Image 1 (cartoon, rainbow, N blue to C red):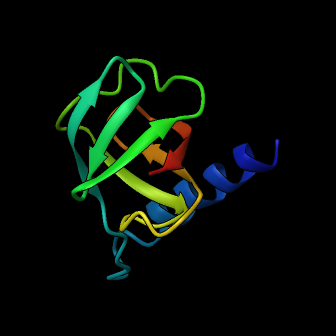
Image 2 (image 1 turned 90 degrees about the vertical axis):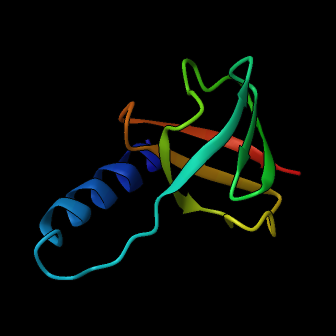
Length: 90
């Protein structure tokens, strides 16, 4: 429930600030393999369960964790699929 609320607040904030010059960096999935392994920003991330139908080219934002792989876990939101996923940072 906590993660759902985080995503909801972030999405609402993102929509509210679209016209206010707020910057949120979206990263493209460079490689997607079996809904489990993803290369984002040149770093490898592994789904804790599965990130179903996440594909190469999808845009993701980091709600928690680091796009540079400097983390143990990360919580991602896929802007194209409008879904979130927990991953391990490799």
